[in-house]
Length: 408
Ligand SMILES: Cc1ncc(COP(=O)(O)O)c(C=O)c1O
Image 1 (spheres, rainbow, N blue to C red):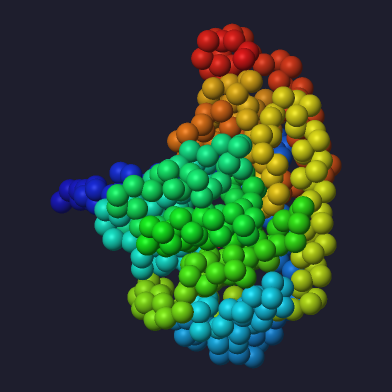
Image 2: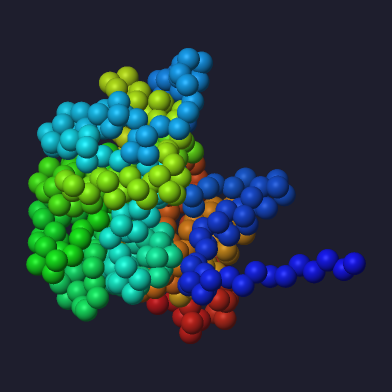
């Protein structure tokens, strides 16, 4: 008998969900490495530091002694209390544990917040460039992302003015991230309040992504929760706490909204990882925080080196990145196809960057994102290799050169 492999009839929405281009870059980079090339990875958005030792020790102790059953769908009460204490101690913000839900990464927090707030056909504002999952999650919910082009003058952010201008019929919510991926730019508390005012005027909801919150280099970290309690705030142990693979984050909801999120968490994933929750309890203790502070200082030094070196090779940084570990570079001097450009650079230099296409539709072909997740000497080496390669940029008809073959 002949076995037929039928392609399943996928849901219509799947056509709109885009894959991460960065994974293609990563694949190509890994192929080069397999051929023995030395690749400098500046493409993937996760810190290069290992999980802090006290966190590992806490996980090991828990594995040896604590029962590894499901926890409450809202998260372990002790961890919710710990997060609440951390808000009070670090920011002076009163965030009761009852408003905190521990989630399977902030990815689950984003999915649940949007799932609780958005109906099919609703529209959600977000900046372009921005974090790609935001628009894909909105599409997954049969709703419509409204990508609001934002440039250097707006700090690449969804400012209050941009949100007001873009807020049309059907818009139910706005998402903003500070610091942002891919630009590292921030919204100040004053700017958060202005954006929140627009949402309040229009009876919409503001979702604040503070996943890179502790990773800021020019001023102390802030939270919008110090000034408002009607914002939905997404946060994570992934970036500042450097626990990407542990898959743990949290969501802060306004008073009275926890039960709805609890219902979704119960049904989507029952509860977040139990060993990760035990481990995370150590992340916010003084010993863990001291390690993270030293690493933050190291990341600031890396950023400063790149901000000095990149303009020398013609990579323009149009808005100062104040946080996260990304620099969004305008490479329009060299190309109007940043995807081909990144591929060419990888081939020529072994330096892997992320082309802008992952982050939006407004000007992706003119931009690349650099993640400074390598030590300073490797960053300097990467810039030197790119600089040398740009000297021998190919002939006028090359796709990486520019549509007319001209250097503009
Ligand atoms: C802006 C932003 N939000 C959310 C996430 C999701 O991270 P996680 O699910 O690891 O918490 C990321 C990951 O890169 C991100 O850059």
